[in-house]
Amino acid sequence: MFKIVIVGLFIAIVLSLASALIALLRSRGRGTATVRALTWRVSLSLLLLFLLLLGYRFGWIHPHAPPP
Image (cartoon, helix red, strand yellow):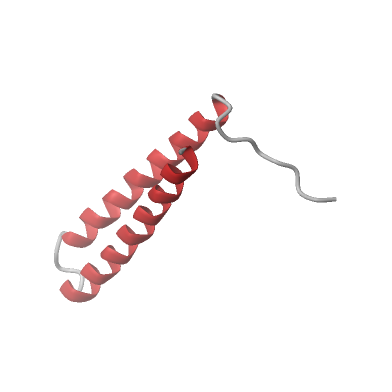
């Protein structure tokens, strides 16, 4: 379940970035939609980082060593 939330947040971050690009191209940098979309992207990225740290702390996710 935790991994699904992480993947969902990652997809939301990518969609927000695409939304910012579309808003930038449509308004040619004169509107606030680009700033709003990028603010959402940064907020979602911080939430993702927080959840990853929380998941590691409580043992919901585990790092693994690279193959030798």
